[in-house]
Image 1 (cartoon, rainbow, N blue to C red):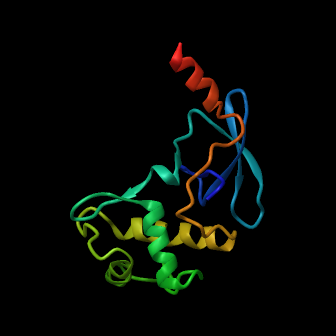
Image 2: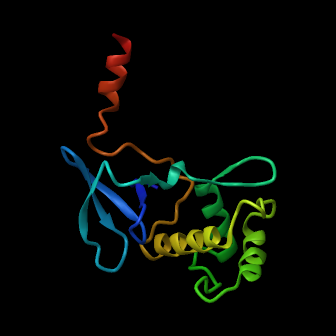
Length: 150
């Protein structure tokens, strides 16, 4: 995934990082409107690369779970209607994606959000979940490396 995909607490859907402002990030929603909005330091912003799912043994990165879901669905949108599915149905479906998920700590709402996010990414043509996320313009990684050397 070449773009940084973000979740912003309190705002529905997913966002793509476009640019960095002085006191904010400029993000573009991945919904039908693709509107650009600022996201501020007071917003709880999380990159999908920083999220993991609980299993019985270790936490699995969300991108690995998304890749498993993609393999199950053949790269298409999810076959299950997460809005209408009940808790047992969601857990049964998710067991096909991640068989050893922690049934006590992974709630139905988590599974619904995962399926919703997966569908949003597929609709936007973002399906290479294993590709390492590259720094975006303005990350100044070289500047930080130079500062660490001094």
